[in-house]
Structures are given as structure tokens and as C-alpha cells.
Image 1: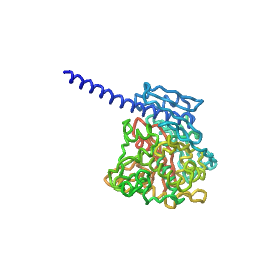
Image 2: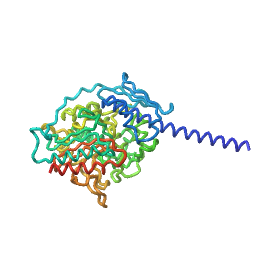
Image 3: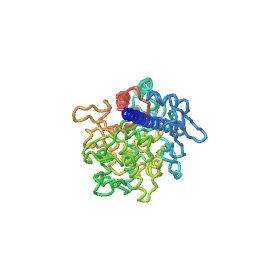
Image 4: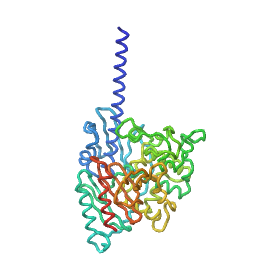
Length: 452
């Protein structure tokens, strides 16, 4: 009997232990998410703390209402915990945005010189540059409908036709000076950095990506190329499930010190190039390996995007936020104004040329918009495509040409590039109550029709 009681007690203790581990994991992810996002929205985007706290964390999980939070304006830091569990803090640093502290203090980073802004030309309704071949009334009606849709929760729409702004609108609390969170639009910035590195000669996309963890041919992951990574066909395991605090993506973004290192530990479960699987881990692995390649080539990684992309574009607001190891979280955490997101879209419309100088390899725009073989034409090289699938999969934006491609992020962040119409549309929002693409599609279709 005593033995039975002892076993029962041990099982109870074990069950309690497992429950505490799960609770701490959930608390760590929730606290990390809150601290990181709140820090960036308040100290980088310049929004008020009450607006951020009351608006940006609703309808995610009831646990956010239970968090203890501390917003330190003087230190530019946000701390959070759940009943003392999962303590997290995020620190804002000038030029870099916010970093979630994990595994000790964040790595020290050198100062990055600011970029000089270059205003976009304007051909807005009611101005001398207004165009006769654009239906401004139809665009205005489309924008009005979009901003009146409470479920869509649109924050900004910017339309650039033939290099000039023809429409621009913001929700209350946001302006043309507000930097917007990318979420996965950041992946396309990572692809742009890779393109700039290819142009520099630091890497070749058809060559193996020399991740630290698999530098020898004996490792089956040694065969993974930069192209496999860019097209999300690496074959590496990765769980992109945000609802699970123990999933790969949750641990990587909100619990790991080195996001790319966490992804590099994954096992190979498919032959490289043969299976498509969307993975934020892949992008952070690219950033970490790109950092290694650039530094080996003598380049300064932390100013590389500034020097090769943002300064030539005059896109002064871009901030790439690093993890605690100092590597940019290129999957998810980049901020820029709507106009600066549009400038990056224009770089692709112009095949990587800015002011007569090439900044991306010739044909790079075509490359990122070419379907990955195993993606059913849905995905290129860190850009989403607007093509229908072979087995009847509908394209994301009906009424928008098949050759359109896009930077796309969680909760409805888009930079839509329409080559045939020389058009870029930027849309940001907080679309949580419904799937974003169907909600945004009518707006995009109406704008495309209005410029033809």
C-alpha cells in the first residue's frame, strides 16, 4: 500500500511539474510577445502607451489581460510577466528598435548613421500634378470602404503609380510619419539583402548556404543552397504554429537568444528543393548565415541594408530589429513608414535600379517572382505570388493580375507590386477577426481597375 501511495504521489508531483513547465512556457511567450511589441510600438513607432496596450493585444489570448506590465519611459524599456512567471523585458536602442532580452544582456551594437529621406513625387487629387487617366473618385471610394470596415481594421493605404503617390490615407492615431511593423513582410527585406550580397559577390544563390551547424559534406544539410532557403524548400523541420507556446516559431521569436541558431538545429526531413514549407526559421537562418558571409567578406553586417538599399532609396525610417545575439530577426521585426515600404516596392518595379545605379542583380525582380517548384505557384523567393494553383487553388487577390507579387505579413500587412500597371500598393492593418487576404482583396481590385 505504501508503495502504491508513493507511486501515486510521484505521479502527482510529475503532473504538477509538467503543468508548471507548460505554464512557464506560455508565460514566457506571452510576456515576450507583449514586451517586444509594446516596446517597438511605443518607443520606435511613437504611439501612445494607452493606445498600444488597449488596442494591439486584444482578441489574441485572454492571458494578455492577466500580465503584469511595466513601461519605463526613461529607460525606454518594457517588462512583463504572468504572476511572476516568464519574465521578459525589451529594450529600445536608437537606430535598431527594440530587442527582447534573452540569455543575458543583448549584444552591443555599433552606431548606424541615419539615412537622408527622399520624398516621393505626388500626383494626388486636387493638385496640379493630378492625372486625367486615373479614376480618383473610384480610388477614394475604395479607400473609404476599406477604412469603414471595422473587421479589416485598416491602418494605412498608400498607392504609387508610375513612381508617384496618387492616394494616401491613415486611420486615426497613424500618419505618414508612423513606422509600421512588417511581421512577415520582413522576409522580403531579407531577400533584398541577399540580392545585394549577390551583387557584391559575397554569396551565390546556387551554392550551399554555409550554416555553422552543417559545414561538412557528411551532414545531409550541407546540400541546402541559398536558393532552397529563399524558396522555402530547405527540407528542414519547423513548426510554424503560433498558438502553441512550445512550437518552433514561438520559442524562436520569444524565448531564444539566437533566432537563426534555433532554426539551424532543426533536422532535415525532406530532400532539399523537393518540398515547400513556409518557415520563419528559414528566414532567420538566412540572416544569421548572411551575417557570417558578409563579415567574412569584410562588410559591416549591421549597416549593410542601410548602405546598399535604404540610403540609395532615401528610405530613412527602416529599422531592422535584432535578437539578443545581435542578428536581425529578418522573419518578422522590421519597421518602416508606408512611403518607405513603397520605395522598396518601387526598387522591384525598377528591377533593382535606383537613380541609374544597380542595387540588386539584373533579373532579381524576376527571380523573386518565379514560383518555387513545390509551392503550387503560391510562393517565389521570399515573396508571395498572385498566381492560381495547378489544382484549382484560387489566387489571393481576384481582380489583380496574375503577375502581381507581394511582401505579406501577419494581420494584413502588404506591399503589392503590379509590374504590368507600374503600380505599388501598401496596406497595413490589424486584421484579426477574419482572414486578411479576402478582406483586402476588393480594395486592391478596385484600385487596379481605377488606374487602367
